[in-house]
Image 1 (cartoon, chains in turn green, blue):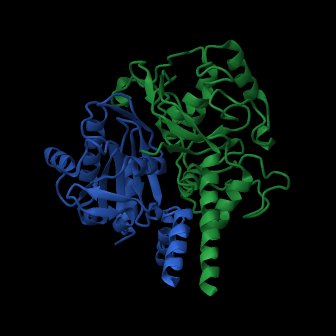
Image 2 (tube, rainbow over the protein chains, first blue to last red; image 1 turned 45 degrees about the vertical axis):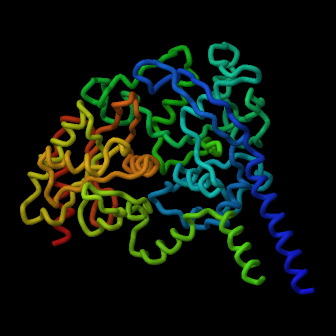
Image 3 (cartoon, each protein chain N blue to C red; image 1 turned 180 degrees about the horizontal axis):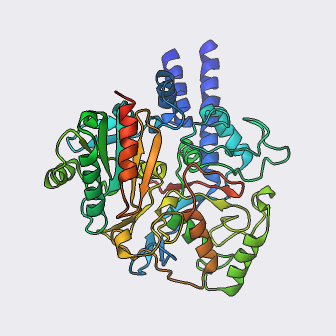
Amino acid sequence: MVLKYKITLVFYAVLFMATSLIAQEKGMVTIKRGTYVPLYGTSDKKPVEVSTFKIDVYPVTNEEYVNFLKKNPQYSRSKIKGLFADKSYLSHWKSDFDYAPGKNNAPATNVSWFAAKKYCECQGKRLPTMDEWEYVAMADEKRIDARTKEEYNKYILSWYEKSKTYNNPIGKTFKNYWGVYDMHGLVWEWTSDFNSIMLSGESRKDKDSDKNLFCGSGSVNASDLMNYAAFMRYAFRGSLKASYTTRNLGFRCAKDLKK
Amino acid sequence: MKKIVMGLLILLIGLQSCTSQKKNDTATATNKTISDLSIYNLPSQWTTQDNKNIEMKDLKGKVLVMVMIYTSCKSACPRLVADMRHIEERIPENLKDKVQLVLVSIDPTVDTPKRLKDFSIENKMDNNQWLFLRSSEENTREFAAVLAVNYKKISPMDFSHSNIISVFNADGELAFQQEGLGVSYDETVNKITEEAEKLN
C-alpha cells in the first residue's frame, strides 16, 4: 500500500517535472539558418552566417523574472553585487520581489547584462548573439528580410520616438515571419556580445577611426547607411556597460539546437 | 525502493534548478571578505601559460595590471604589450613583488597555453611578474565586460578591440584605467605604486 502510494507519487512528480520542462521550451521558436550582411562587424561586408537556433517568442516578463529572483535571491535588488549591476537595477520595483501591480506581463527591465545572462543560464538557455538578434529582427510579418522596406524602417523609427513603451505588456506588437513578437516596439534588448561594437568617436578615447586604434581596423563599415534604425541599435549597444541598467532595456533568451 | 525514489527526485530537481547556483552560494559563504565590486566574485576558470588552472581570486593580495590582447595581432597589440613592459620597468624595485601583470587572451582558440608561453618568451615576459590567461569564449566575453573592453572577431585572423590597461587594487576593485594607444602612462604607474605601497 505504502509502496503503491510512493510509486504514484513518483509518477506524478515525474509527470509534473516533465511538463514543466516542456513548458520551458514552449515559448521558443526555431529560427532556420541563413546569412545576412549586418550593418557593422565585417571588414569585407561579406554575409554573416547564422546557424539554426531557438529564440524566445517574447521578452522575459516581470513575473518570470521575479520567479528567477526567488530561486536566486543573490540576484535580488538588495543582494546583487555592485560588480554585476549598477544602482538602478530594478529600481522601479517596489521591493526585492515586488514589481508594480498589474505589470506581471510587462517586460523585465532595469536589468544588467550579468543578471540577464544568469537568468538565461538558469533556464538552460543563453542570451542571443547580436547577429542572431539582428537576423530575427530584420523580419516583418511576411519577409525574412524587410530591411529595405521603407515602411518597416518607418515603423521602427516611429517606435524609437515613442516614450514609455516598456509599460506595455508583451505580445502586443506584430508577430514576425518566425513567429517572434516584440523585436521592435516594446523594449531594447541585451545580446550576449553587446560589447563587440567598435564605434569610433564613442565614449572611448579612440576618437578617430585611425588604423592604429584597432588591430585589424576597418571594423566600422556601415554596409547600409540608409538603415538608420539599425545604426541606433548598434550605437546604443556601443554605449552600454555590462553592469548598466536602464528602464527601456530588457532581454530574451536563445538556445542552440540540440545536436 | 526508497533509494530509487530519492534518486529520481534528486535527479529531477537537479535538472530543474540552475547548475552553478549551489557552487556560487558556497563561494559567497566562504569569501565574505570579498567586496561587492571585486573581480574575485567572478567564478570563471582560467588557464595560465604554464598550464595551471586558476580563478581570479587566486590572484588576491596583489595589485593587478591587466590588458586584453591576442598573440597573432600585428597592429595595436604589440604597442599595448610594449606599454605593459614600460609600465613594469617603472614600478619601483621594492614594490615589484606586490604587482602582477596579467595579459588575457581574447582569442582562446589560437592562444593555447603553449602559444602564450612562447609569446611570453619572445617578448621577454617570462618571469614571475607576468601572467598570461585564457579561458572559454564565454568567460572571456564576460571578463571583457567587466573591464569594459569591447572586441569583435572581424576576420578569421583578426579582432578589433579597445585598448585599455586596467589597474586593480589588492582587493580586486578597479582602481584606474588607461585608455587608448600612445597615451602617457605616468598616471597608471602612479596608481600602481600608490596601491602597492598600501601593502607594505
